[in-house]
Length: 353
Image (cartoon, rainbow, N blue to C red; front, side, top):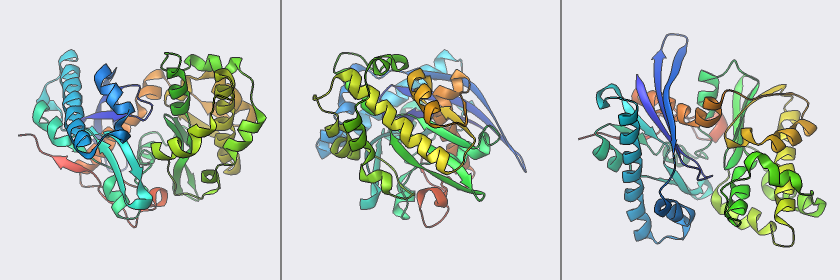
């Protein structure tokens, strides 16, 4: 089975497309990453994504279709560049782009219309992987842990992804546990945009700053950190609770330095409390050498940084895996992780016409 996994993360650094083959055997699942590429968003689309929560209902519905066309065009470009035929792809598994995530109110919204993608590509699409889990009382997130343990389970004790937010998965008494830990790249990316850059390369600007103890204490005191899992974070929380603390009372370098220290403290706290001796780190934050340096100050275990393809494309690979499981009628959520009432085959299927 060959699947295209499409991943658009909250950090807005583009759309990752992974062409993955899966072989399902009685006891094992073999996968191979065949082709991969990250597409940058057109400026007009990126601007709308940055302000998507401020769009009216009508504007958001229109943008949902526009983003579906954008995803379809990227997919067709990907197929053409890699000389792939549509007939060899069983489905496109699209995460979509999260605009709203409020599971406590019973909803989550990832835009990028699946029917639009299917129509314009001529390939079946599975998307909206989170909603059914939320309907069943879950957080709708994280969904990646099922892939962590089926595809990468022998790599480490724990799996840390550093995207817009940091999230972790590990096993406790042989039961998968996973949850969002803290913000990660998204605050620093938003701050870097104020000086015309998209991200702090390697954490260099953060490293040049001075950690502010008062700000660090405010960040560490946020109520989210006292909650027990299942728990997840969304942009709404970031805008209401986190970003207002990062004020112009401090220099940009000092804010970045303090934010980095805060994330390192929160991540290491979980790793140490759960006595996890090794952690497999992926996502854009795995390239932030200053963060990794600060993490190792607080965590004495082994940090495993995989090859660049896995750092960048693990989530796209896992969503391809979720798409494959959906086609096989298998569960795609983990109730011990999300808090849903039962295992579910989540996702909406859109048949190409």
